[in-house]
Length: 390
Image (cartoon, rainbow, N blue to C red; front, side):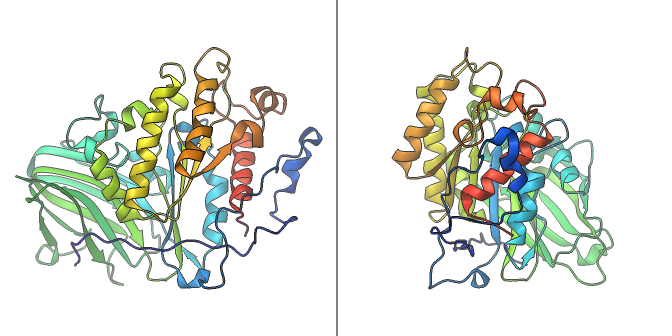
């Protein structure tokens, strides 16, 4: 068992160089919409070098969020097109991070169950209170008074993994729990005491051939908070994703989360890439100056926690209300921030098209969200922007 905080360092290279002018991405059909060239910029965020090879790197994680423009709407998301290509760049892929939340588990094809005494963080109205504020994205479950019969189970449906980590909150007066698989005998369960100084912690368990596909957290007693599980393989070059998005999420809520813990989270995950599409739900109520402060703080925290992470600040697609809300201000401040913070800027309006273009080409599901076609084309442009191909 391992209880120490783990982090890793590395960065992704692709087999495409910045001098490439023509690439076969397999997405050329997207360029035929009304004869408009959709693939305009080619940034190649991940530069290839002569000193480090892709197969020498480990656990390539892509983090993306924060709202329904990432999590999806109408049964579709850009992630369904982006993820397979992201993972195909590497020699292997894994389930990666799954937050203790019904929707996240379902999106990964897993079955998730908890006892009625376990409270979902995602439904909280105030993200500034403990233990919600210690989550990276307001997801997880907690209880103030576990009675020993409380539990969490996650059925991986036979998905391949070699080990997993449960991320939980160590805190003064914290309770206890036991961890294993559904067929683990009581005497072989790993018993954990979460009492201690306030800190993000994990416990790691290896999977044996005789273990079932169901991981089990049981005997939950006292005050406990669980955030997510990470499934891992033993391959050195295995890719995964971490979805920190939730429909309706605002930067106003993200701003309420603990910044020190945010830095700890990014130090632990240490992603290769962060696609930060945030602020769409703040467009009607938050001016540009305020949003710039919130986004700037977030970028600073990522850089402090994971200095090698490649950050792409995303300007969301235009919505039907773009003429009457703060969208124009938000576009300006995102451009400014990308220059000030030295991060990449993906301007969906410029790269893909404005609201009129999305509507004319039947790429919107409603006044806010792209449809399946729109999400696919956004994913294709993300990949092109990054210089990633399979």
